[in-house]
Amino acid sequence: MADLKKLIVQENKKVLSKSNPEERFWKKFKFAAAIKEFGAVTHLSFSHEAPFYYTVTSGTKVNVYSVKTNAVQQSISRFKKTAFSGCIRRDGKLVVAGSEDNCVQVFEVGTRSILRQLTGHVRPCHVTKFDQDNTHILSAADDKTLRCWDLPTGEEILCMKGHDDYIRSAATVSMCPDIWFSGSYDHTVKMWDKRSGECTLTLDHGSPVESIVVLPSGGIAISCGSNKIKVWDVHRSGTQLTTLSNHQKTITCLALDFSNTRLLSSSLDHQVKMYDLSTYKVTHSIKYSAPVLAVGTTTDAVSGKATKRKKLSQYDLHLKRFQYREAFDHVMSSRHSPDIVVSVVLELFRRDAVKRVLSGRDEETLQPVLTFLVNHVTNPRHCSVLCDLAHILADLYSPVLGMSPAIDKLFEKLNKRLKFELKVQERYMKLQGAMQCFFTATGLS
Image (cartoon, rainbow, N blue to C red; front, top):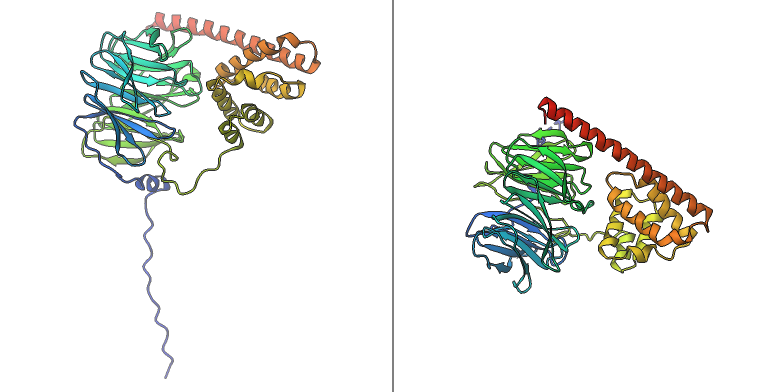
């Protein structure tokens, strides 16, 4: 009798998931908490330092929540009318908000007390933000003005006019603290230079602008209005890069994720969509049961749910220990990208430590600084910060010029680079003026 052959088990092939890694990433996010407010939620704002709070603006209140527990820490309700744009400072200590009664108010989170009442707007103020230095406040209102306030004194230091309708959105630029953006119902996005108070660029969105975000470098601005999102290259005179039309109804808000590689948009069509900024393609969508008026993100470190602590870089460790000179010398001597070097310089400016870091240097320690400036001072992304750094160096070391041929040569190169850049900018401004005249004459403006 023949031996019995072993039974061959028929295995069903596993059906491969059609979802991509990006979609699987976003699907990991669950509704950890559903918090009921008594009115429509019109604005969200997150702090990025301990104690990691976020604010929810709804009706006549701005509630302060903990990111880790989603519990209310404070409820600020000292508004006579509807509150708008409650924004928490990055250190979590102060909140600024506008209101329907035209007033801008600053509150201390710990006590809920009013620290400043800023009056000047004559129509409801829908936009408030802390500037990058945390000591100035940006506000915009239905009176078509954008204003800058000095927080320590409560004084208005700048009023910028140029829009023809309500201003409902604004943005600051982390790496260009002197540049602001505003979006208005007159269908335009404007870029402002805070130093001169003048509008330096106007972009035509084509419909009332509801929200704008700007990448940290200041080179890319993104606006939304109606059901369209438009992406602009600021460094190329506001060239429109692309238009995204993935929502069915008005887009209400835009936000960048913590890595600045993804864009989130919310809409009256009940959808929140995520876009890959390298391709401008939708990578995921979340459906809600009601129109979404606000969207916001916080960093993965803030969530407090990461199981593995991220290792600090060497310059971060120096900054943590207040070793400012060591932090600066480390990024100068190591092969770090210009973005990292400029970020460290910005942090030193914020801590008022730049002069201490630059003073008292010999030829060996001064050469890397001057070499970096010569190579990167004309980079549009870093020009503002590096020019300020160059001015401080010139003030500190002009009395000792002539004592070192190597240092003199580097200063001479830096001077030539700056003069050349000034000539380029002058030609650019003349060309821009000629083009504007041409567009006006042909009716294309």
